[in-house]
Picture (cartoon, helix red, strand yellow):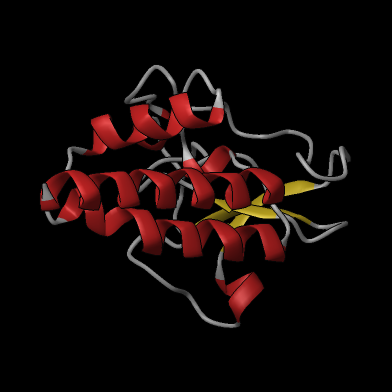
Amino acid sequence: MVTFTKYHHRRRYPDWRDPPSHCDCCGEPTVTLTSNSTIYGREYGDWPYVYLCMLCGASIGTHPHSVYPLGLMADKETRSLRTALHAIIDPAWKEGQISRGELYQVMAEGMGLQRFHVGDLTKAQCHQANAVFRAWETAADFESDS
């Protein structure tokens, strides 16, 4: 386990969320910063730290080399939906079809949100985001075929 220093507590971006003191799912103050091995049985990734609710099991990863969470804590099903959503939308910007910022703006507008961030989405919003992305993808394909 790493000893968290001032470096890890440095906020690199102004929109990073504060570390949770209460679970975003159950509301209880039973949140701890721990290794993801607590959830998965072994560590995954270069920076394997997560916030975990010891009561309901909700969790959220942290930004690399930081104690700041990647979004809102979520249950296993919501985390799976977020992972699936990333797998669907990330290739569009990673392959240069659109910039990440532009895509996230399209997603925010399509969902009626101020800001789109997969780590902030609920289960219902993950389904809505999938529909918004599929509509954008269809429109983009149609426009490129013209």
